Image (cartoon, rainbow, N blue to C red; front, side, top):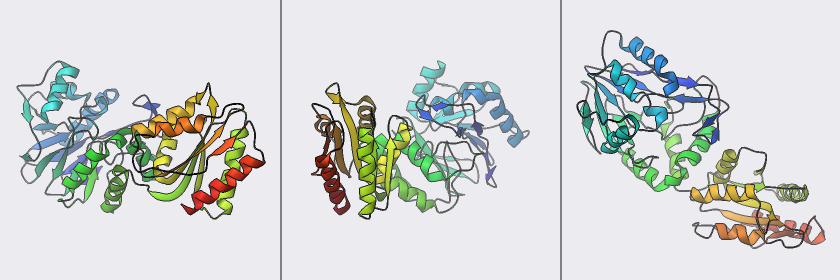
Length: 385
């Protein structure tokens, strides 16, 4: 793949992976992206996962021909991007490694060496000239590891963005960018909104024509669409108006109440209502949907005088990623002591900018006239908020 006339894509697709980072299901695989810049000097940006050593080295050889790389730029030390540093240096021992001080410290941890004879330590604002191309290095700590930096090419106006602007999915599978990019952002980077905002402020001074992330496709058109989404996500603002209902149900009665609420909301004119069963769905997709919409309803049962486990885990995912600036409502079920709504609300006590609905639906075993009335009241309140 040609990024620009001087820049080549040399990454790989992984269709054998089942769980990314041991957590996230990736049915369409993953890409591990690496790039080559061919100028008076040659730079390789990042390596790939250890499963693809031979393929990656062959791609470098094919792109470079008889030339040798002068620099290996390491933007991020997570093993899916750094695992082949040592293999690369064995193949090209004269190459200069370019990375942040913290990245070299991590190389000691991973490989037992900081490459003191072949290294260039760079920090925020440093520039590397390859000839025609001038690369500016910008610190991007905690997007999403502390050693991360991004690289901006002033000639072709290309941002090599490390893990920012990435997505799940291999590059040889066609799918919409936004859903898997949202799930990737919320899951991988979502906790670090302030740090993402800091990076976006630094990026604002550049003209950017292409974004080359470490996962997912090279972004070449309507760059403002992607940066605007990152502004929204990193400020924990809803992406769109809508209601997301997340529920667990043991014997089906809570589910019946949720289905009635969904029906009632649509009757009142709520156009966007999404419902997910947390026991059966991919929770990372449910978390992404919670961040997508402006309102959320959490419906579950009292379980051992606590929150049903799948719901408790889901709320922990939300609060760990700074869930904020939304309307939250509760539905609880319990045959003799429905107390889960109070327990759920307490889980959000440190969250910022939340508004809680006045109406809580209380189901004692199964729907009755009183709980049906509460569902009507909650639907009306959500519609008006």
